[in-house]
Image (cartoon, rainbow, N blue to C red; front, side):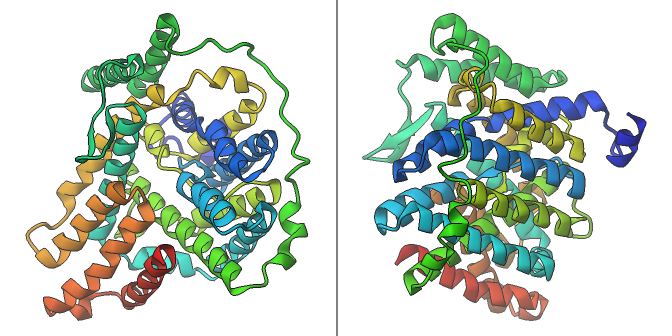
Length: 435
């Protein structure tokens, strides 16, 4: 145990085994929904849902364990929600591309990811983003995941007249979210250890007691076979032979790149890892998620990236790679306890996401609001993430505006050269996604 303690530097990070394991459990519970949501989304393309379930669990476990052991960060990985929807609804269903070919596109994007990571291009881009925009990214992610929680819990719903509106209070599950939010908030204010985890547990317990959450029919089940999807991407690489498919690969690359980069920066800000506007060991973190994306494409799932729900584990004290390793191990166990995970509904995780959003939004205080050339792009990142429902789009809007406002303020020389490059990259990125 002492060797593990020393490797993960628990004493230096002022943490311990209990706190790290609790944080890992909290992160897992916060993102366990992806085990069920991802197969549901990708299943719309004709992919075998059972195989996608297993691929999701294994790819997530690989990424989490690599992130924990190599980069030593409490950051978990799993197939991204936005990019899996793009995979299913835009590429396969919208463009009529077979899911096998789309999966090959993910594989090629992952290879490119690995190459630009090895040559430290991703690391250079992350370091080039100014500190104010990094604080905006962190806070924006907080607003984004709080919005996800409010919507998932039924407190915020679509409204034709006002775009969004307050959800109905006649639905029992909405009150379950309200209960969880109030309980978690009280526990947090009273500084109860593991408040977010306890809040989720009590919310699930109330849901079962009131019949709002069904008891699982069983506890243990065998992991579904990977055979329908395993290695399919490799067999269809030759299908990537048109300009349209090249654009698909580029889109997979860009969306995952900036979603992951933004998430890593935001979580590092939350945990206090940033030093002199740089994220230590960022190269190893990027290599971990790139490898997980490659493994996921071979196993049979959409692109894997860092998960914003890791903020829940960080919020309860997770500071070392042991948190991520714990989450990875739980994903492996999750393959065999899938019926038990069904009690972790969106109403159970929603309060945690809202509370964590509050914690991450604190970074807004560090943004220089007195200088409009910085305040405007920072605000656009903040508001862009939840309103476009995309971390990547929020970052893109802010990074397009930032060089322009700095030039207008006659401070163009203070802008890192790579930010000018990103200006054109993001314009192309937005064009590709919206034509």
